[in-house]
Image 1 (cartoon, protein in one colour):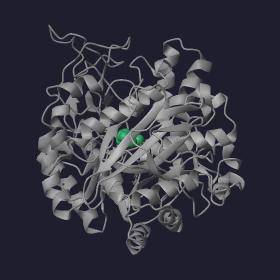
Image 2: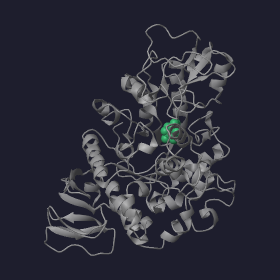
Image 3: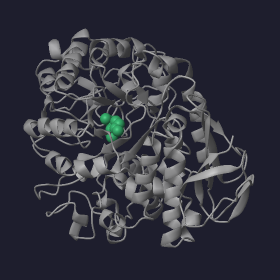
Image 4: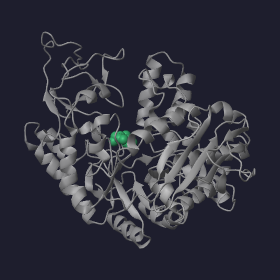
Length: 586
Ligand code: NOJ
């Protein structure tokens, strides 16, 4: 996918359930998105990715699709979707939907038919196995049995906990595979009929005017077959799915076929959710004629995560953040155009995760705003397509928890069970969910200080973050120094024809890479003229003086009011978390 029309664009993720509720049922919807398109346009957004709005039981909040050709009534109708596509087009905006095809819902017609006749055509759409109660064959190490004694085909642990095998409804000895929730049976990509169904569906949507897709969990479509057990990595006797994925090879054949049959003929924009990619395969993924236009860089997001459980995850330091950012830049820029994020609907809020807790404790509101703007600047101006997750532009934060009963997210509940079984105290387990859980990103968008943050006139499906009277869009829009207005300036700067060459296509070169708590880099272009921009952040509370590679010609952005440059000087004095974008004289 070598088209590059999207390189100078800015992308935004909407989590529809929590964006804006137009009808007072407590659930955000498509008419709510249409009502806020002008807000996004004014912010400077071009590409909008919608998390799933297809018909779904919402067991995993829409990532369990029961009908790919319909909109869930809670989100609206197909007419609403068509209207959204038309309204976006009017504004030169592009709508991207989520493509969830590793699995569907157990309420999808295909699965229901598979349950009726596991040996029939639809049985082949999934991974179904008829199991025996007999002891595992001689030489089968690590075999795991179901509670009623059936020997499972393999001991993989589902992403949301427990074995990947579940009894097929209506049957005693048939089981099906689900690498995510048991309501998300995996589709059998080895079956050409399944692939045909998927390609037909993708083309149907692209023909409707969709610009492309964010492609969910795609690396999982290729299983290491035949099923076998691996050495267990926890006391449950199971092994992480990643162990199997490392061994699975050949996903490229499916992805190349999907590209050729769907995305390429439509010149569609695609962004892959790819974890654990093999470095030598990167050019196949996002190089010239890669499977996808781009893919997300998750290196910062996964840093410090422990296989032992969420309680053992480490908080990321500024130096670790920098090292993730810089090594991803090095790795991906050599191959293609990466997608840069600090948040999405599966991650904690960036403003909480990437500003050290010890620093946050010492910050007043003004300093916290400065730090949020520092974070925004350093990730946004790195090379690649910048993505903003809803609410990030106003610096929304993690949700405080009082009890596990307040938690909605299935993966947090699994993590809670794992931690409790390991003997982690309730209080520590709750703190771990507060730091890592997916509800953090899913609380309703904070539009105003009105009731329910202006998200709904009804009762919101998920608790509004109690900080909404402080952190909300209404309060930030008129304030020139707000986080929101800083994002607006960043977007405007990246799109400014005077700086677009270095900031969009220019090279990325680290500066002061070994300096503790400094995140700094150069963006340079040689054509049509030579231009060098320096992004430099004093990512700590203590002020300091830092060297510059050349005197600054102009300050393009400053995240606080403290004045900065002295003409002709090769150094700059920065306050706590002060971050500058400078045009250099070189
Ligand atoms: C990744 C999605 O982002 C996440 O929300 C979902 O639970 C899994 N894939 C399964 O579809």
